[in-house]
Amino acid sequence: MPSYSDLRYLVVDDFSTMRRIVRGLIKEMGGQFIEEAEDGVTALQVLRANKIDFIVSDINMPNMDGFELLTQIKQDPALCHIPVLMVTAEARKEDIVRAAQIGAAGYIVKPFTKATLEEKLSKIIQRMTVTA
Amino acid sequence: MTQNVPMVAASPQVIQQIGELTRMLHDTIEQLGVVNVGVMPELQAATSALPDARSRLNYIANKTSDAANRVLNSVDDAKLEHQRLMSESRQIVEAIDADERLDARMRERVHQHIGNLNASCDRIDEHLTNIMMAQDFHDLTGQIIKKVVRVTNELEANLVKLLIDLHPDQSVTEVAPAPPTAAVQTAPAPPARPSDLEGPVVDDTRTDVVTDQNEVDDLLARMGF
Image (cartoon, rainbow over the protein chains, first blue to last red):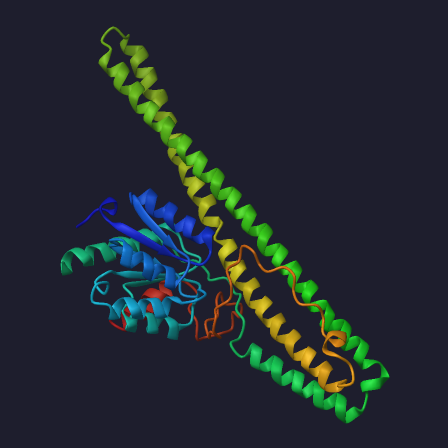
């Protein structure tokens, strides 16, 4: 199983404070390489210019929302293997189901705790190892 | 681990309802024939008040963003200090362990002190993480402010249209309020196209939403994810 420090992360959220919080938590867990993007369009640019192993993405964003970003990632053969953890305030059951059906690796509803993020990250990283 | 989702959401039908209400208001005013008996100035005043309301919301968004970022900057600085202290503590322990001339009792006391210091540092670090996490209020309230600003934009557009319909003899600039001068600087721009995404939920009577992370996990588990 890769450790947190082995992976390269992309945090996508239109609010800079939330990006800083998620970045801070990943760093506390040992993550070192963390890129940021403020919407889906920028996220795709970052993904195509860098090697990214793990994506933490909001849903409700301008220009390209998290659902569209997730769809594009899953349709791109070069990116579809990257797990996407949705971290969002969208609490409708239909949104959670939709994210799972498109291919999200996990779904966290805001506000969340460090323990929740750590638990989901850990589970997804374990799955990465098993499926690798 | 169970956290309540803040009960703060706007109905996805809000915009449509505003349009319907405005049309109803328009029809009622026409039917009553009250255009010239005092309703117009009040409508104009209400319409003109919307840019001010929007500016105040933008002010709140900017101030809360500044405050959250200042707190996060301080947390970052404090965590760096914390790491430095922990690193120095480790070096001191290594140094006294390597120094055979040091009295055993003295070595034990220093060990004890460093141990207490490290435990204290761990607790402080946990507090700092909690302070950092608490800044999520800016994201959650910011999403709601964006939504309310979008609703006021729609309301204003509909009211201006109503005023123009009811008073076609006046020019648009006479009835319409000035365009908004200040955008939300720190809250991101609204989506380019209308979105049915809701943001944080405000209505605690709804059954189509989850209220905590456990419900998310249960829902996904039932679906086999």
